[in-house]
Length: 339
Image (cartoon, rainbow, N blue to C red; front, side, top):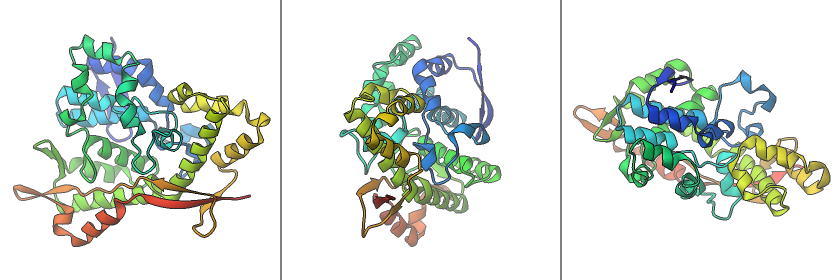
């Protein structure tokens, strides 16, 4: 069994030597994550890029994020079971990531919970239970987030998942440079299974970065258009049996290829395809709209050290309390596509 050398945009060149982690990464179900975009569907991002020129930018896949969560937990000496849970936390994501919440009735537009709800069911259909058994990890324990407070916590707390995806998004889309990324990582601490920053300055700088990412990417108008356009196209393709629900748990490219085969046969699908690929543009127009869409909104309230204590930003900054209230509400948009 060969060790894995992984060159990460956040953590640099890292060697993965742990046999259990190596086996999980080698699983075809984990390798599938290489071909699932972290943000959803690239042509509709706030900073879109050509699907033909992915080599010109950093990879933004569920694969790199999942390994990133593992590496972050490892670097802060989380229990190895928690590191493994971090490695597995996104394995059940569908093609186009959270676009699935705008396709299936079981999804939730305001909470983006489909992947979490489907996580255990999906894992049971893979080779992951056998790998965990091989290394003596109880499946039920690994699948229970309550066991792993460093990996997963509810908003507005920090957790390894949230720290990694935010810093990764910021680097991929050049909202943060390497020096700032290193500043945040150097000032991160763990105490009593809680993430916090070394001081107020680093905590507030991170909170402001996260707020910008939410406004521009996670809950911005571009994401709203993406969720509606991709969700409508996939839902229609399902209704017409051009794809099936199993296809949604393959990869972005495999679903796209199936849809492309039918475009010339179906005018409605052709229209939805053009919207999905941003050749028919859309805007937010509450006065005249075709459909409405909610986006899950995210905001953090990090802890930071004050002497021997830790406090939240909102404990010392009353304005941040107002920000938390406002930004915790789902964002609603009113989408009108060009004719």
